[in-house]
Length: 79
Image (cartoon, rainbow, N blue to C red; front, side, top):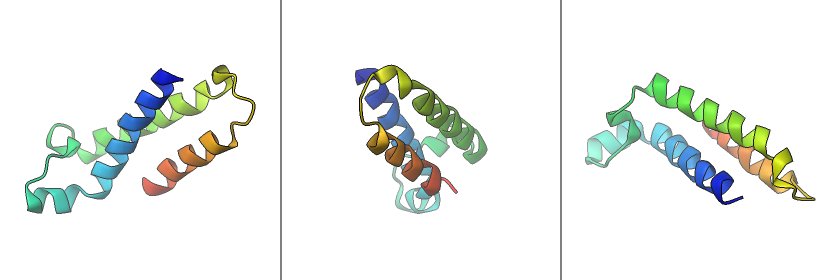
């Protein structure tokens, strides 16, 4: 569960950076897109979200609906 939460945090940050890339650039804030292109950052996010989804079964949590909703929010934000 700790690894899942860590990967989720990274995915969330990438998602947030992708949403704010232009604003962060204007304000001089750090953003993952300083190191990766928007396309590459999006690809990493897709990979991480797929990994998160694949690991839900292994977490052995009885009610995984909340985790699935969280992943759904990440996917919607990255449209």
